[in-house]
Image (tube, rainbow, N blue to C red; front, side, top):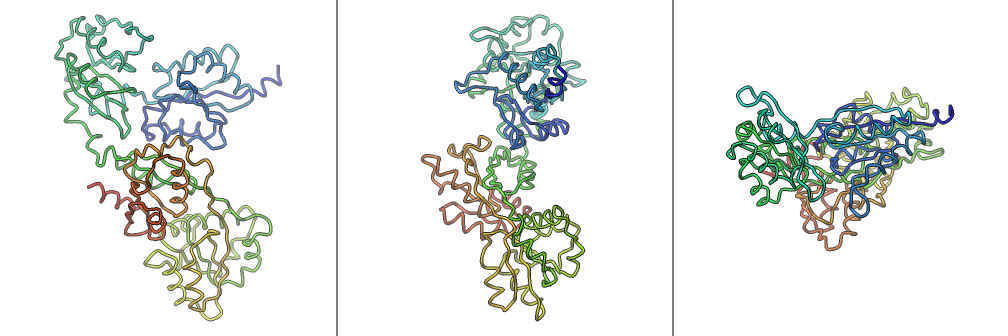
Length: 508
C-alpha cells in the first residue's frame, strides 16, 4: 500500500475560462506548464491548448472518434488510471469547473480512492460573455442579483427549470448551454409572467475574435437565434441590463475584430507577434512549422571555435536564436564568459540586439538596414587589418553575409550553432486547419516558417497558395513566400513592431 501511495500522482482541476487566452489565470497556466497528462474538453480555446507542453500527453475527452461525448464514467476511470501511474494530471475544463462543468462529480469519484486533488477556478462565460458584450450582469439601476441556469437537457427534452421562481426573483437571468432550448426558455419565461418585450441577448463564442452578439427581446430571441444560425457555445442573457450593451460594448469596437491570422512559428517560447496581434483584436492561431536543433554537441564547431577564441576580434550574430544557443552552451559547458571580454559584438537587427541585451551584453555594431549584406558591408568598414570574425548562426544561413565579407577581404569563420528542421507532423499540429483557409493573413518571420507552412499546405487538397496573403518580416522571407506564389506584404523594417504596423495598415 505504501508503494502504491508513492506511485500515485495528483489531479488538478483547472478552469480554462471562456476562450480568450488572456482570461486563463496565472495559476492555471502554471499547472498546465507542469502537467504530465492533460485531459481537456472540446470548448477549451485553441490558444490555451497550445500551451500544453509537447512532453505532456494530451487527451481530448470532449469527443471520441465517433464525435460523441466521452461518457463521464470513462473520464473518471481515465483520471484514476493516469494519476495512479504517478502522473501530474490536469483536468482542463472550459469556463469554471464547478459551474455546470461536472467538476464536483469527478472529484467525488477521485476522493473515494484517496486521490489528492486541487482546484484552480476559471472565469465563467456567464460573466465574461456578458462583459465582452458590454452587458454588466448587475447594475444599481437595473439588477441587484443574477441567476445562472443551465439550459442543457437530455436529448429531445426541454430543460427542467422553475421559471416562476426565476421570474418572481427578478434580476439578470443567464442561461448557459441553452442554444438548442432557446425557444422553450423564452416561452417558459413568458408563461411565468415575464414581459415578452423584456430585453434579451445571445452571445456566441464569447470572448473570442469569432464572438457574435445579438440583442433582441424575450419574444423575438428564438427567431433571432434561428435567423442568424447561432451555434454553441453561446450564452443567453435576459434582463434590462441588455439595454446597456450598445453603449458599453468595447469588444466589438476593437479594430480589427474578427480578422484571423495564422502565425508560423519556428522558435520556442511566447510569441511577441502573436501577443501583439491578439491585443489588437486579431484571432491568432500558431503553427509550429519548424524546430530548433542546437548543434552544440561534443567536438562541434562551436567547441573548437571557443578553444581558439583569442584568434577572433568580432563575434557576429544574425538571429536571436543564434544568440541564445551560443550563450546557453557557454552556461551548460561551464565556459568562462570573461574569455569573451576582448570581442566586439555585431548583430543583424534590433530583434537580435534585444536578445544580446537580455544576456547583459551591449552590441557594438548594427546596420541601419537589417540584412546580411548590409551587416557585412558595415563590418568591412570597421574591422582592422588582421581582425577575424566569428559568425555564429543557422546552418542554412543566407550566403549574402559571407560572400560580401569575402569580396571585401574580411577574414572570418562561419560556424553553424543550430539548424531549423521542418516539423514532420506540422499539418496536424495543435488542430490548425489550413485546408479550410479560414485565415485573412499568414504571418512569417523566417523563410523556414514559409517552408514549413507550405509543407503543411501540400496535404490540403485544393489549397491554392496564391490565395494566401502573407505578411513577411523582411525581404528574404518575402522572396521565399513569393517563390510559392503567395500574395506578399513586407514590413518596413525587420522588426515585430514593424510587422504589427503592417497589419494595422492592411486592416484600415
